[in-house]
Amino acid sequence: MNEEEKRLSAVDRAWLLMDRPSNPMTVLALTIFDGRLKYSRLCEIIAQHFLAFERFRCRPVTDLMGGRWVEAEDFDLADHVLSVALPGEAGKRELEALAAELASTPLSPDRPRWSFHLVENYLGGSALIFRIHHCYADGIALVRVYLSLTESEPTAAHVRKGPARKTRPGAGAEAEAGESSDWFASLSSLYAPAASFLEKTAREGAHLVERGLHYAMNPGEMATAIRDVADVATEMARIGTLADEPATRLKHRASGVKHVAWGERLPFEEVRTISRVLACTINDVITSTLAGALGRYLESQGDPVTGLVIRAAVPVNLREELSEPPTLGNQFGLVFVELPVGIRHPLERLYAVRAKMQALKGSHQPLATLGLLATVGSLPAALEDPALALFSAKASLVLSNVPGPRQKLYMGGVPISQLLFWVPQAGSIGVGVSVLTYHDQLQFGVIADRNLIPAPDELVRFMHAELERLVLLVLIGPGGSFAG
View 1 (cartoon, rainbow, N blue to C red):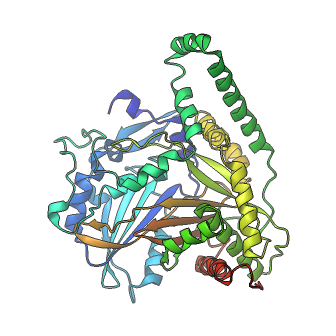
View 2 (cartoon, rainbow, N blue to C red; view 1 turned 60 degrees about the vertical axis):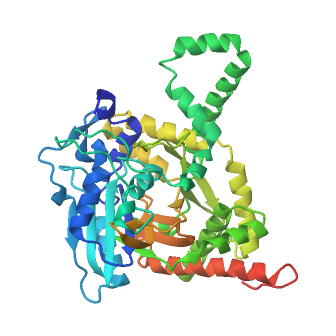
View 3 (cartoon, rainbow, N blue to C red; view 1 turned 90 degrees about the horizontal axis):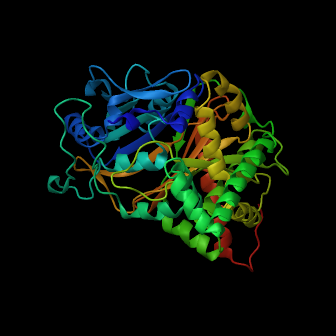
């Protein structure tokens, strides 16, 4: 690693400083196999592909104003790749309990902050739980890295070739980690104007004179850049003036004990068809479904929901293009999406969500939140608490939607039947909802502090029910009636 790669960026430092006993900043991923994956084969795959990224041999260390990636002494893969067995029936309930326990347990700061737990006895096959601290990379980068551990064919002859390992631990370069899947190309278009501006401003210092001459010859572009900066500054101020979230049970004091749940696989084509018929986006359908499910859940707990609107913090990719190999670090912003949980009728709620989502398109809010995170990460650690409290007061949950690979994947020759993940929550936010599509199937996942949602599988069931109600309404057609 060169000196620049050893430096902990301000945004990565901000995510590292967000760690709290009740909210470890840990990304959790679950892979379920149709068959048994051998521990020795898993170790080979991780050594060849995952450790091709030198940062994964390092641990983050902060000082008063900054931080660095420090190579771990006496790195031992066995400390990070563990084999475990589920108790009892070794079914879904036991696997959810293990995932929840790991999600609630902070990763050791004395070693690189990631781990793999291979469950060798899940429903006659295997499962793999992957944990990593958010400071290493954002979701887009981590998904790409994780998929470099997989193959598109079941035979060993089709296993991807990774970069040769260096003889000295930690000396490898962040180099080739496998080919990326085609579906990633679509992600690069998200908020492209904002990403372009982010890249230009990041190079500002190095090209100040060159840009000054360019703007002198092209005053129209200079005016556009000035307007962009002003818009970002205005958005930063607007975020600060957003009203705090209403005092629902989703904002109760957290216990630090997480529960996780996931639902049955749903046909992705069905969701896409609904979005086309109703002239909205897939994100609109998912967000509206979540809003309806949250309304039903709160109502089932005896909470009033009439007219209630809460916000979800939604990550937005700010990478201008998806490089090969994938670059680590955090390059995303957030938008605060209003969820009209008090609207009962699925269509009315869907179009209310669509209007809010359209208003956010082209917004500078993702850049503004990224700028705020960079600012927080540049301040002394003692100032993190008030900044984090202000930031997390603006949302009740985190919602992350990642389009996954459409083809079936394998790891070590073993077919993968399900891919799931759960995002960390910061500050006073204690609920996370994730949506991942894989092999033309869609799955909802929920992670929640037990003081907020003791049984997250209930929320998952409500999400399935709300989606079914929307499908039914589409099938009934405009001439039908609907009660709900």
